[in-house]
Image 1 (cartoon, chains in turn purple, blue):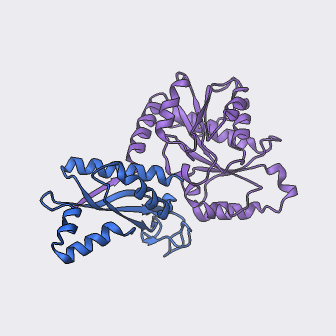
Image 2: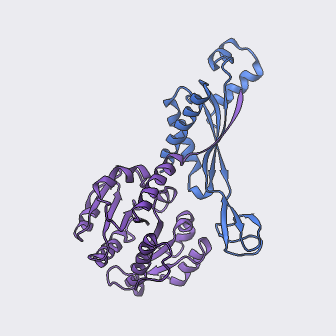
Image 3: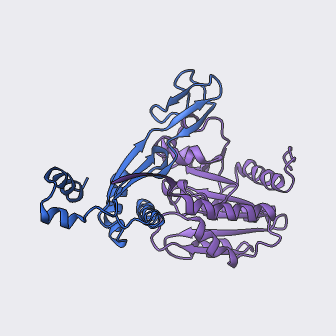
Length: 227
Length: 145
Protein backbone atom coordinates (compact mmCIF):
# COMPACT_ATOMS: atom_id res chain seq x y z
CA UNK A 1 0.00 0.00 0.00
CA UNK A 2 1.19 3.51 -0.74
CA UNK A 3 0.25 6.63 1.15
CA UNK A 4 -0.40 9.69 -1.03
CA UNK A 5 -0.70 13.28 0.14
CA UNK A 6 -3.68 14.92 -1.53
CA UNK A 7 -4.43 18.19 0.30
CA UNK A 8 -7.27 19.20 -2.02
CA UNK A 9 -10.16 21.35 -0.88
CA UNK A 10 -13.59 19.83 -1.28
CA UNK A 11 -14.86 23.34 -1.98
CA UNK A 12 -12.45 23.74 -4.92
CA UNK A 13 -15.02 23.35 -7.69
CA UNK A 14 -17.36 25.88 -6.04
CA UNK A 15 -14.46 28.22 -5.28
CA UNK A 16 -13.34 28.18 -8.93
CA UNK A 17 -16.84 28.99 -10.18
CA UNK A 18 -17.19 31.73 -7.56
CA UNK A 19 -13.84 33.22 -8.62
CA UNK A 20 -14.99 33.33 -12.25
CA UNK A 21 -18.20 35.12 -11.24
CA UNK A 22 -16.29 37.53 -9.00
CA UNK A 23 -13.87 38.51 -11.74
CA UNK A 24 -16.70 39.00 -14.24
CA UNK A 25 -18.57 41.19 -11.75
CA UNK A 26 -15.39 43.08 -10.95
CA UNK A 27 -14.92 43.97 -14.60
CA UNK A 28 -18.55 45.15 -14.76
CA UNK A 29 -18.16 47.10 -11.48
CA UNK A 30 -21.22 45.23 -10.27
CA UNK A 31 -21.80 44.97 -6.52
CA UNK A 32 -23.22 41.66 -5.31
CA UNK A 33 -24.64 41.02 -1.84
CA UNK A 34 -25.59 37.59 -0.47
CA UNK A 35 -28.44 37.76 2.07
CA UNK A 36 -28.55 34.90 4.57
CA UNK A 37 -30.93 34.23 7.48
CA UNK A 38 -33.30 31.68 8.97
CA UNK A 39 -36.60 31.22 7.14
CA UNK A 40 -38.99 34.02 8.02
CA UNK A 41 -36.44 36.57 9.27
CA UNK A 42 -37.52 39.11 6.71
CA UNK A 43 -35.05 38.88 3.82
CA UNK A 44 -37.74 39.40 1.20
CA UNK A 45 -39.39 42.26 3.12
CA UNK A 46 -36.03 44.03 3.48
CA UNK A 47 -35.34 43.52 -0.22
CA UNK A 48 -38.74 44.95 -1.16
CA UNK A 49 -37.97 48.13 0.78
CA UNK A 50 -34.47 48.26 -0.68
CA UNK A 51 -35.73 47.89 -4.26
CA UNK A 52 -38.38 50.54 -3.65
CA UNK A 53 -35.77 52.96 -2.29
CA UNK A 54 -33.33 52.52 -5.16
CA UNK A 55 -35.95 52.73 -7.94
CA UNK A 56 -34.74 55.40 -10.34
CA UNK A 57 -31.36 55.65 -8.56
CA UNK A 58 -29.63 52.34 -9.17
CA UNK A 59 -30.02 49.48 -11.60
CA UNK A 60 -30.77 46.43 -9.47
CA UNK A 61 -31.64 42.77 -9.99
CA UNK A 62 -32.44 39.92 -7.63
CA UNK A 63 -31.76 36.18 -7.68
CA UNK A 64 -33.84 34.48 -5.01
CA UNK A 65 -33.37 30.92 -3.82
CA UNK A 66 -36.05 28.72 -2.31
CA UNK A 67 -36.62 24.99 -2.03
CA UNK A 68 -39.98 25.44 -3.75
CA UNK A 69 -42.37 28.06 -5.18
CA UNK A 70 -41.92 31.30 -7.08
CA UNK A 71 -43.72 33.26 -4.35
CA UNK A 72 -40.73 35.43 -3.41
CA UNK A 73 -39.86 36.23 -7.02
CA UNK A 74 -43.47 37.26 -7.64
CA UNK A 75 -43.40 39.54 -4.59
CA UNK A 76 -40.09 41.12 -5.58
CA UNK A 77 -40.97 41.52 -9.27
CA UNK A 78 -43.70 44.03 -8.34
CA UNK A 79 -41.00 46.59 -7.65
CA UNK A 80 -39.99 46.93 -11.28
CA UNK A 81 -36.57 45.25 -11.32
CA UNK A 82 -35.54 41.96 -12.96
CA UNK A 83 -35.99 39.03 -10.60
CA UNK A 84 -35.25 35.35 -11.14
CA UNK A 85 -36.33 32.58 -8.81
CA UNK A 86 -33.90 29.71 -8.23
CA UNK A 87 -35.82 26.63 -7.11
CA UNK A 88 -33.35 24.26 -5.48
CA UNK A 89 -35.72 21.27 -5.15
CA UNK A 90 -34.47 20.36 -1.72
CA UNK A 91 -30.96 21.74 -1.63
CA UNK A 92 -30.69 23.88 1.50
CA UNK A 93 -28.34 26.54 0.09
CA UNK A 94 -27.24 28.20 -3.15
CA UNK A 95 -23.99 27.18 -4.84
CA UNK A 96 -21.92 29.15 -7.35
CA UNK A 97 -22.98 26.93 -10.27
CA UNK A 98 -26.65 27.74 -9.57
CA UNK A 99 -25.85 31.46 -9.79
CA UNK A 100 -23.95 30.88 -13.03
CA UNK A 101 -26.89 28.94 -14.47
CA UNK A 102 -29.54 31.52 -13.57
CA UNK A 103 -27.52 34.66 -14.23
CA UNK A 104 -28.32 34.74 -17.98
CA UNK A 105 -31.98 35.32 -17.05
CA UNK A 106 -30.95 38.66 -15.57
CA UNK A 107 -29.41 41.32 -17.77
CA UNK A 108 -26.22 42.30 -15.97
CA UNK A 109 -25.31 44.94 -18.55
CA UNK A 110 -25.41 48.32 -16.85
CA UNK A 111 -26.39 46.69 -13.55
CA UNK A 112 -25.14 48.37 -10.36
CA UNK A 113 -26.33 45.97 -7.69
CA UNK A 114 -27.25 42.29 -7.70
CA UNK A 115 -28.96 41.00 -4.58
CA UNK A 116 -28.89 37.25 -3.92
CA UNK A 117 -31.49 36.08 -1.43
CA UNK A 118 -30.20 32.73 -0.23
CA UNK A 119 -32.35 29.81 0.89
CA UNK A 120 -33.60 30.41 4.45
CA UNK A 121 -30.97 28.61 6.50
CA UNK A 122 -28.23 29.81 8.85
CA UNK A 123 -25.96 26.79 8.46
CA UNK A 124 -25.25 25.56 4.93
CA UNK A 125 -25.23 28.84 2.94
CA UNK A 126 -22.36 30.09 5.11
CA UNK A 127 -19.93 27.60 3.53
CA UNK A 128 -20.56 28.53 -0.11
CA UNK A 129 -18.81 31.42 -1.81
CA UNK A 130 -21.09 32.78 -4.55
CA UNK A 131 -18.58 35.38 -5.73
CA UNK A 132 -20.36 38.06 -3.69
CA UNK A 133 -18.77 41.23 -2.31
CA UNK A 134 -20.27 40.58 1.11
CA UNK A 135 -22.46 38.21 3.01
CA UNK A 136 -25.22 39.94 4.96
CA UNK A 137 -26.77 38.07 7.88
CA UNK A 138 -30.27 38.87 9.14
CA UNK A 139 -31.71 38.04 12.52
CA UNK A 140 -35.23 38.96 13.60
CA UNK A 141 -36.30 40.08 17.05
CA UNK A 142 -38.52 37.01 17.47
CA UNK A 143 -35.58 34.61 17.19
CA UNK A 144 -33.63 35.02 20.41
CA UNK A 145 -30.47 36.91 21.24
CA UNK A 146 -28.23 33.84 21.22
CA UNK A 147 -28.54 33.08 17.48
CA UNK A 148 -24.99 34.39 16.81
CA UNK A 149 -23.61 31.94 19.38
CA UNK A 150 -25.68 29.05 18.02
CA UNK A 151 -24.69 29.70 14.39
CA UNK A 152 -21.19 31.19 14.68
CA UNK A 153 -19.94 30.40 11.16
CA UNK A 154 -22.33 32.72 9.35
CA UNK A 155 -21.91 35.55 11.86
CA UNK A 156 -18.13 35.19 11.48
CA UNK A 157 -18.29 35.32 7.68
CA UNK A 158 -20.87 38.09 7.37
CA UNK A 159 -19.62 41.63 6.89
CA UNK A 160 -22.73 43.16 8.40
CA UNK A 161 -25.65 42.00 10.56
CA UNK A 162 -29.22 43.28 10.39
CA UNK A 163 -31.65 43.03 13.26
CA UNK A 164 -35.10 42.96 11.64
CA UNK A 165 -38.68 43.40 12.88
CA UNK A 166 -37.66 46.01 15.44
CA UNK A 167 -41.26 47.31 15.40
CA UNK A 168 -42.10 44.22 17.49
CA UNK A 169 -39.64 45.08 20.27
CA UNK A 170 -42.31 46.63 22.57
CA UNK A 171 -44.15 43.28 22.61
CA UNK A 172 -41.11 41.07 23.18
CA UNK A 173 -38.50 40.47 25.88
CA UNK A 174 -35.75 40.73 23.28
CA UNK A 175 -32.57 42.34 24.62
CA UNK A 176 -30.87 44.32 21.83
CA UNK A 177 -27.67 44.91 23.84
CA UNK A 178 -27.39 41.15 24.44
CA UNK A 179 -27.50 40.36 20.71
CA UNK A 180 -24.88 43.06 20.08
CA UNK A 181 -22.71 41.49 22.79
CA UNK A 182 -23.16 38.00 21.28
CA UNK A 183 -22.26 39.21 17.79
CA UNK A 184 -19.09 40.76 19.23
CA UNK A 185 -18.10 37.36 20.67
CA UNK A 186 -18.12 35.98 17.13
CA UNK A 187 -17.22 38.96 14.93
CA UNK A 188 -16.29 41.96 17.00
CA UNK A 189 -17.26 45.37 15.73
CA UNK A 190 -19.20 44.50 12.57
CA UNK A 191 -22.06 46.92 11.90
CA UNK A 192 -25.45 45.83 13.23
CA UNK A 193 -28.33 47.76 11.69
CA UNK A 194 -31.70 47.77 13.48
CA UNK A 195 -34.49 47.91 10.95
CA UNK A 196 -38.21 47.52 10.58
CA UNK A 197 -39.12 46.87 6.95
CA UNK A 198 -42.74 47.38 8.01
CA UNK A 199 -42.42 50.91 9.39
CA UNK A 200 -39.25 51.91 7.59
CA UNK A 201 -37.47 52.65 10.86
CA UNK A 202 -33.70 52.31 10.70
CA UNK A 203 -33.60 51.56 6.97
CA UNK A 204 -31.43 54.62 6.29
CA UNK A 205 -28.30 53.13 7.85
CA UNK A 206 -28.66 49.95 5.80
CA UNK A 207 -29.37 51.82 2.56
CA UNK A 208 -26.38 54.11 3.11
CA UNK A 209 -24.17 51.10 3.70
CA UNK A 210 -25.41 49.55 0.42
CA UNK A 211 -24.92 52.80 -1.51
CA UNK A 212 -21.39 53.13 -0.13
CA UNK A 213 -20.64 49.56 -1.15
CA UNK A 214 -21.86 50.26 -4.71
CA UNK A 215 -19.90 53.53 -4.90
CA UNK A 216 -16.70 51.86 -3.70
CA UNK A 217 -17.00 49.14 -6.32
CA UNK A 218 -17.10 51.80 -9.03
CA UNK A 219 -14.54 54.08 -7.40
CA UNK A 220 -12.27 52.09 -5.04
CA UNK A 221 -10.95 55.31 -3.47
CA UNK A 222 -14.46 56.38 -2.47
CA UNK A 223 -14.41 57.14 1.25
CA UNK A 224 -17.46 59.11 2.23
CA UNK A 225 -21.02 57.96 2.42
CA UNK A 226 -23.11 59.18 -0.45
CA UNK A 227 -25.86 60.81 1.51
CA UNK B 1 -27.95 18.72 5.01
CA UNK B 2 -25.12 20.06 2.87
CA UNK B 3 -23.13 17.03 4.00
CA UNK B 4 -24.49 14.99 1.10
CA UNK B 5 -23.20 17.56 -1.42
CA UNK B 6 -19.82 17.52 0.30
CA UNK B 7 -19.77 13.70 0.31
CA UNK B 8 -20.44 13.66 -3.43
CA UNK B 9 -17.59 16.12 -4.04
CA UNK B 10 -15.23 14.04 -1.89
CA UNK B 11 -16.04 10.71 -3.54
CA UNK B 12 -15.65 12.22 -7.03
CA UNK B 13 -12.42 13.96 -6.06
CA UNK B 14 -10.91 10.74 -4.64
CA UNK B 15 -11.92 8.67 -7.69
CA UNK B 16 -10.42 11.28 -10.02
CA UNK B 17 -7.24 11.42 -7.95
CA UNK B 18 -6.93 7.62 -8.18
CA UNK B 19 -7.38 7.73 -11.96
CA UNK B 20 -4.72 10.44 -12.21
CA UNK B 21 -2.36 8.23 -10.24
CA UNK B 22 -3.25 5.22 -12.36
CA UNK B 23 -4.49 3.13 -9.45
CA UNK B 24 -7.68 1.13 -9.50
CA UNK B 25 -8.43 0.92 -5.79
CA UNK B 26 -8.24 3.40 -2.92
CA UNK B 27 -7.91 1.66 0.42
CA UNK B 28 -8.47 4.56 2.80
CA UNK B 29 -8.95 8.32 2.76
CA UNK B 30 -8.51 10.94 5.46
CA UNK B 31 -10.94 13.85 5.22
CA UNK B 32 -10.23 16.89 7.42
CA UNK B 33 -13.23 18.96 8.51
CA UNK B 34 -12.68 22.33 10.14
CA UNK B 35 -15.20 23.10 12.86
CA UNK B 36 -16.05 26.39 11.19
CA UNK B 37 -17.39 24.49 8.19
CA UNK B 38 -20.53 23.59 10.18
CA UNK B 39 -20.37 20.00 8.98
CA UNK B 40 -21.94 17.21 10.99
CA UNK B 41 -19.26 14.54 10.74
CA UNK B 42 -21.61 11.58 11.24
CA UNK B 43 -23.83 12.82 8.41
CA UNK B 44 -20.79 13.33 6.20
CA UNK B 45 -19.50 9.86 6.95
CA UNK B 46 -22.95 8.38 6.23
CA UNK B 47 -23.04 10.20 2.88
CA UNK B 48 -19.58 8.93 1.97
CA UNK B 49 -20.57 5.36 2.79
CA UNK B 50 -23.68 5.58 0.63
CA UNK B 51 -22.05 7.33 -2.33
CA UNK B 52 -18.70 5.54 -2.55
CA UNK B 53 -20.14 2.63 -4.57
CA UNK B 54 -20.49 4.94 -7.62
CA UNK B 55 -16.87 4.42 -8.57
CA UNK B 56 -14.82 1.25 -8.76
CA UNK B 57 -11.88 3.10 -7.25
CA UNK B 58 -13.81 4.04 -4.08
CA UNK B 59 -16.30 1.19 -3.70
CA UNK B 60 -14.27 -0.40 -0.91
CA UNK B 61 -12.62 2.70 0.50
CA UNK B 62 -12.63 3.32 4.24
CA UNK B 63 -13.21 7.00 4.95
CA UNK B 64 -11.77 8.55 8.07
CA UNK B 65 -13.27 11.91 9.01
CA UNK B 66 -11.05 14.03 11.27
CA UNK B 67 -12.18 17.27 12.89
CA UNK B 68 -9.87 20.28 13.03
CA UNK B 69 -10.15 22.92 15.77
CA UNK B 70 -10.46 26.58 14.94
CA UNK B 71 -7.13 28.36 15.50
CA UNK B 72 -6.83 32.11 15.80
CA UNK B 73 -3.83 34.32 15.15
CA UNK B 74 -3.84 37.51 17.19
CA UNK B 75 -2.54 40.62 15.47
CA UNK B 76 -2.34 42.36 18.86
CA UNK B 77 0.05 40.03 20.72
CA UNK B 78 1.15 37.78 17.87
CA UNK B 79 0.10 34.51 19.55
CA UNK B 80 -1.77 31.70 17.80
CA UNK B 81 -4.23 29.90 20.03
CA UNK B 82 -7.09 27.39 19.83
CA UNK B 83 -10.48 29.04 19.93
CA UNK B 84 -12.33 28.37 23.18
CA UNK B 85 -16.13 28.20 23.55
CA UNK B 86 -16.78 29.71 20.13
CA UNK B 87 -15.46 33.08 21.16
CA UNK B 88 -13.36 34.71 18.46
CA UNK B 89 -10.89 36.32 20.84
CA UNK B 90 -7.22 35.70 21.61
CA UNK B 91 -6.81 33.15 24.39
CA UNK B 92 -3.62 34.90 25.54
CA UNK B 93 -4.49 38.61 25.60
CA UNK B 94 -8.25 38.66 25.02
CA UNK B 95 -8.07 40.85 21.91
CA UNK B 96 -10.75 40.45 19.24
CA UNK B 97 -8.22 41.39 16.53
CA UNK B 98 -7.89 37.78 15.43
CA UNK B 99 -7.69 36.00 12.14
CA UNK B 100 -8.81 32.41 11.58
CA UNK B 101 -5.74 30.39 10.55
CA UNK B 102 -7.16 26.86 10.89
CA UNK B 103 -10.55 25.23 11.20
CA UNK B 104 -12.17 26.64 8.08
CA UNK B 105 -11.17 23.91 5.65
CA UNK B 106 -12.83 20.85 4.25
CA UNK B 107 -10.24 18.81 2.41
CA UNK B 108 -9.17 15.40 1.27
CA UNK B 109 -5.91 15.30 3.18
CA UNK B 110 -4.35 12.01 2.15
CA UNK B 111 -5.16 8.53 0.95
CA UNK B 112 -3.74 5.05 0.83
CA UNK B 113 -3.85 3.33 -2.52
CA UNK B 114 -3.44 -0.36 -3.26
CA UNK B 115 -0.29 -1.24 -5.16
CA UNK B 116 -1.41 -2.88 -8.36
CA UNK B 117 0.65 -6.00 -7.59
CA UNK B 118 -1.35 -6.67 -4.41
CA UNK B 119 -4.21 -9.13 -4.65
CA UNK B 120 -7.78 -8.05 -4.34
CA UNK B 121 -9.55 -8.32 -1.03
CA UNK B 122 -11.54 -11.32 -2.18
CA UNK B 123 -8.45 -13.35 -3.17
CA UNK B 124 -6.67 -12.45 0.04
CA UNK B 125 -9.60 -13.69 2.07
CA UNK B 126 -10.44 -16.81 0.13
CA UNK B 127 -6.86 -17.91 -0.16
CA UNK B 128 -6.31 -17.21 3.53
CA UNK B 129 -2.79 -15.94 2.91
CA UNK B 130 -1.04 -13.61 5.36
CA UNK B 131 -3.43 -14.24 8.18
CA UNK B 132 -2.47 -11.13 10.17
CA UNK B 133 -2.83 -8.80 7.25
CA UNK B 134 -5.95 -10.59 6.11
CA UNK B 135 -7.56 -10.08 9.49
CA UNK B 136 -6.70 -6.44 9.52
CA UNK B 137 -8.10 -5.89 6.07
CA UNK B 138 -11.26 -7.77 6.82
CA UNK B 139 -11.79 -5.53 9.81
CA UNK B 140 -11.01 -2.40 7.88
CA UNK B 141 -13.28 -3.19 4.98
CA UNK B 142 -16.02 -4.89 6.93
CA UNK B 143 -16.45 -2.55 9.86
CA UNK B 144 -18.31 0.69 9.46
CA UNK B 145 -15.56 2.82 10.95
